[in-house]
Length: 145
Image (cartoon, rainbow, N blue to C red; front, top):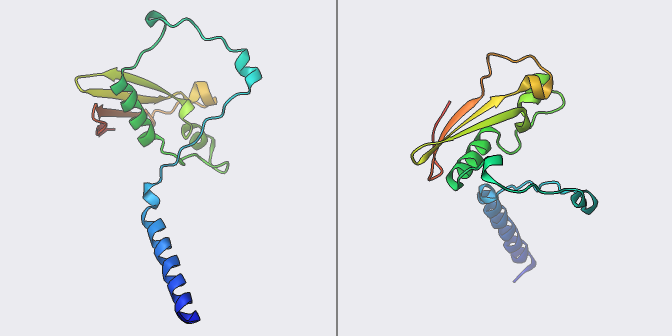
């Protein structure tokens, strides 16, 4: 092989690799690892006695539906920037909301309600009443509003 043929072959391989990586870019799942406390902090934590009367239990399908609704409601990377106003910064944080979960027949209903007054010190707005989801046990969003 001549030097020119080797360069062309290498260039074609690089181009093919770039095309493959571009085509597969939607295949990669971004996972944000949680922050984990130090061993010293963990040593100070005592778990409670687990009992049904003092806990909130979600069934497997309800938990799956909640995760699906959360991923749709606040997709990864949808955080507000420091340049945004206080409302936008508040409502872009998942911890600014409460979630109400109610099971149905092969469907789970979820409602995210903002708590901007309690969590951000802002006056509640009648315009943003949160979001509601109906998610099937198969993991399909049947309705959202």
